[in-house]
Length: 117
Length: 111
Image (cartoon, rainbow over the protein chains, first blue to last red):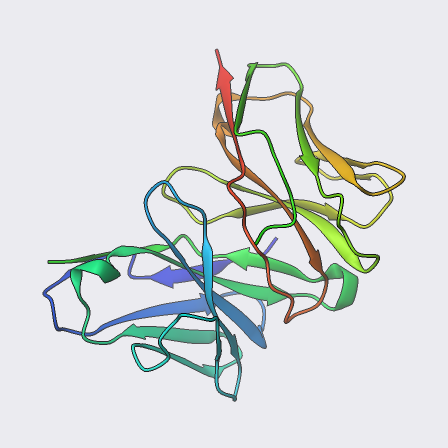
């Protein structure tokens, strides 16, 4: 397996503030990381694909200026929710790709529960 | 949209085998079948993946039909800790390949 660490696990913030979530691959290097969002009783929805050293690719309907992604190293990607509002409250989960070709597997972090008051 | 269909739920008795079905009739030749599970309020956990041959690891077995239009994940001896939502996903392999999660199947293991 592989270990992906996500921090913080839970955050509560006031409306209008920004929140940064970190995703780290602890025992491998990941050129590609992914960010997902999951609302209660729903499935995971991919928000963006993050590639080390380049701009993230956002899925349709995801505001790139609101959800800032930085993938500055092979072991760290960050998601910043800017000017958060109550509707941004959700479970945010990252994953990191490990392995080449047919052995490639996405490993997931434990998730960050964001509550915006 | 997810390219797989799974029953919404099933249950099994602790210690018995759990057989989780998945249909993926539109799977492409280069797409693999991946299985993940998500225990409540946690991130998904990788279980197994395969292309066309049956696969087995320490967690489970994956049986893929010859026409690749369906597959079954087998947990040989289910425990209470296997209670989770199980996602069957088809995807090309590779670092940039996206995973599209459907609704999954909720497996409840009863004592």
